[in-house]
Amino acid sequence: MSRITTRAGPRLAWSLWALSVTLTVLGLLLLLPNFSHYVYDYWLENTLSAVLYSTVGAIVAFHLANVAPQLVRSLALFGPLLSPPDAARPGLKARGEKARSEGEPGMQAIADAIVQSATSSDTRARQPAAVAMVRESVMRQCPDGYARSCEALAGAQPADPALIACPTLMVTGDEDAIAPPQAVRLIGERISGAR
Image 1 (cartoon, rainbow, N blue to C red):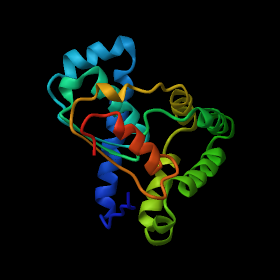
Image 2 (cartoon, rainbow, N blue to C red; image 1 turned 90 degrees about the horizontal axis):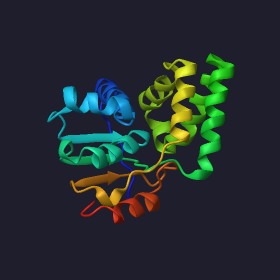
Image 3 (cartoon, rainbow, N blue to C red; image 1 turned 90 degrees about the vertical axis):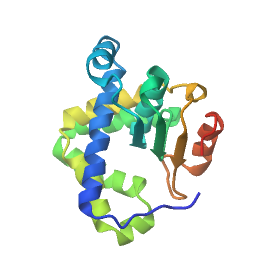
Image 4 (spheres, rainbow, N blue to C red; image 1 turned 120 degrees about the vertical axis):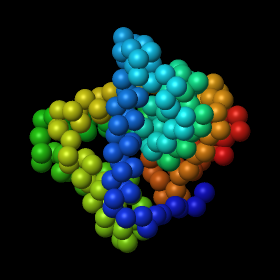
């Protein structure tokens, strides 16, 4: 798979980021046993059709397609993961602890590390607005909330991709260290008709 870049302006990038955060929070709420029925019965019923997620949010999208397939007509996933690899889980817990114990200085170090590991060399060199958005999306979180997210992510379990029946498009980049092309292909092989 080839690298995909966009020349879209910061307004589109901000809108996609805000949508991703909203859907991620909604997805996390769906995974809470006591809350999922309330959300489904009173708010979500027949409201979703296409689900667009990136990286960590794809974990939520996979679960949503498993738990409430009638709400998901299609998936478009960028850099998708089923769950963090076992080798990454201790690092996620350590990142959460760093955020909690060091506060803002810890968050700055985490943001810098994420920019280096989660963006391509081309993006870092040619798209400073995209780099700033990634960094700012980390820096705008409160350290304790970010720590809790890291802990939840470290414990995330994969959904069963074989249960996904909707059309699914998965895209990744040749420099994606989090969701490398071979790992995305393996997920795609388990979803009927995925591209």
